[in-house]
Image (cartoon, rainbow, N blue to C red; front, side):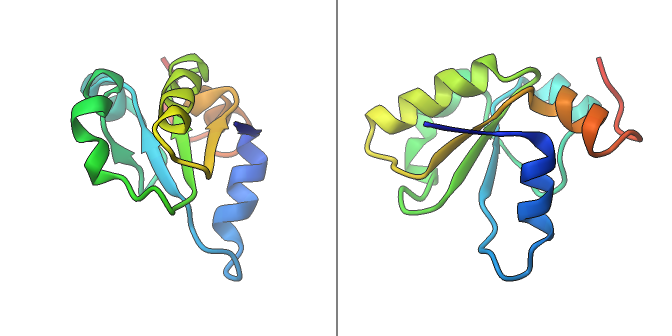
Length: 107
């Protein structure tokens, strides 16, 4: 599994020549309501196994959580289930707020 920093993800999303990844936010609904990266697909971590068919195993998937721990677990789970383009956002939305979007609320 690859890790990506918040600035690296921001550069990827801003690059029109690159296909956009699926931004898989695995936090709880209350967390997503507090703050989220625009365009994210919110599926709570505990719902991933039952909703696996909603994800394209050919797509690049960036797993996102608060600080990067839950998303790393989900990324490993996806890899065990045949997903090959899985990336963990190191530092999660907290790093995004600090390094990319200071207007984003933190918690």
